[in-house]
Length: 216
Image (cartoon, rainbow, N blue to C red; front, side, top):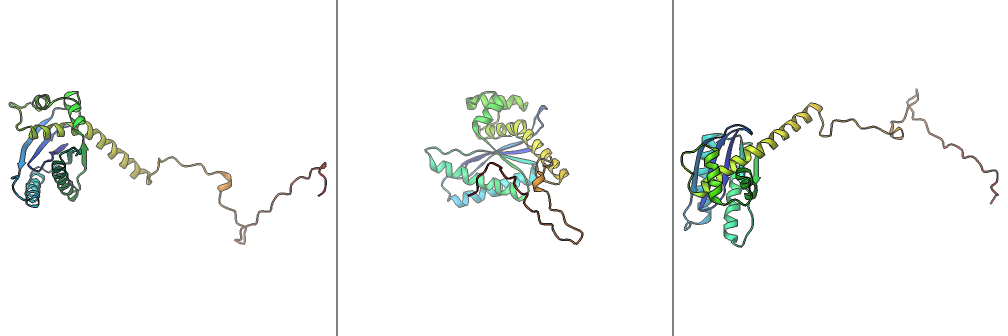
């Protein structure tokens, strides 16, 4: 499975491509950082990121896309830029029919280092070791993108296969239910028809009178 992972950012956007399967050795395909000048207007910067991201999609033909989930904090300008870049990545993936998964920073740290509180140095060290790199990936945005890709291979990849198996099962059964036929209560059975085609009228069963009851 080939994963294209993006650590979104307007000034620095980390991008990493990793090949691998859960339980097997991972391999680095390419890693890099897309940069835009902070002095340029935001629309121009977004266009530049879209153009560069498109070349990553076309060059590597990923099977799935992973993006770090955006969290709101006190720096709203940073959050807005990150969200805008995330939207661009999602749009490019959707146009190619690729699934997109969002992973939180804590989830990524836990998957790579075993601790959701690991710092950037620890994450970089583990990424270098897991991918068998000679030198640590720099800057931190590049290492974060690779950590995100590793996390998706190990966690999201399993979820994707389970979802695919579920869809295949639904396709075989021809329904979106559980595939188990429901029992129909006798009262809900279709009414019988007479030979003439008319539906017989069900008459009420007479109630048994109470001998001890007094007339009103």
